[in-house]
Image 1 (cartoon, rainbow, N blue to C red):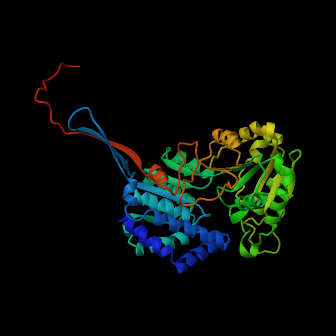
Image 2 (image 1 turned 90 degrees about the vertical axis):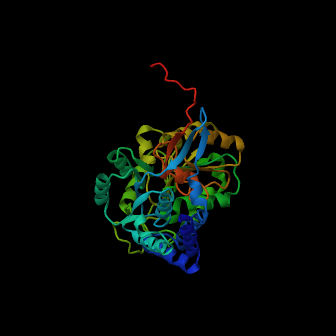
Image 3 (image 1 turned 90 degrees about the horizontal axis):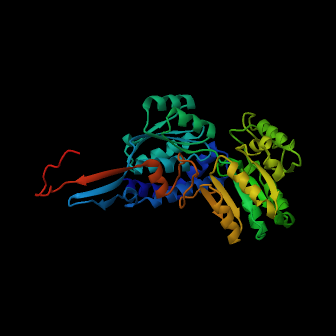
Length: 439
């Protein structure tokens, strides 16, 4: 049934008028450019295409192992949890809730879905489309509420598993409240390392700009810190990044409102960084001008602050430098050949191991960095990025047993099912069997 629903929904989302409707609806509630909003709808449509036909039933593929005697075998099954909950954030109003909702349903669960109420109209419309494509109304519940009400519902309803995507603070509270019965895809302070081989400078600069400032930096995969090998210093990379950032404008939402961090908070964080010896503003560092964005939101030019590597690693500074700012803000630093150990130490000390990029085509450099890092979604090679959660590869953190993935068969099976073993032992009992001695 869900293969058929997915096929119909994928066809509907592929219609130009429907694509455009959802892209513009996303823009009404989440400040991102039309191309960024459209890409979110396209990824969602491709995901649904991936689970048409028999692909849903293949998710629950089981296995059998022969036993010790005739009539005995063990079967391993992927088993649903039953009643589950899904809580998703504002920054991807369609892609995150849709992919997790369908994954939960594919594996046989009964989910209750809560999307950040600022943006929940997008998913409400998508659920209506799914109903039109055959989704039984009783297969899921959809709730609009604030966080406190949802927390009370979770404590009283006691779902067998809760998937949470959002801030680390709320994630840790839920993990405690729900006694560990959670899967989390929380904050990401995501790093990018530029290796010693300088090439394709224009392309690398463009990817850095996209990673740090697309959706005004409001992605859990946004580039938070850039470790730049000193060979890049004379390449003009930083100047190119500055010029690219200056192309962004409020009119087309290539830069725009920040919904969870105020302008004052971003400027305060920048000023605290500037107190570190040797730090400086590379570009940005000022509020946006000529706008009517309410003060409860942030309005900041794309900003980059340079902090020396040795200073970053000092205990008093490290927590400040690696504080995630969910807006158009990144830290840049530089390292030399003999300082790679310090870079890897910094990456290891970070708490949120979500995405990372190692920008190099040097195979020994890649091997060294990849072998000594842990981020769950790591891009490697000269075209490496930190952002991008398409439907064709795993997206999620690593290094935490509570970590959730999204989008792929592996992610769906990990998050939305558990392993169950059934050992069949149907006989026959051998004719020669006799009652043994007590043991």
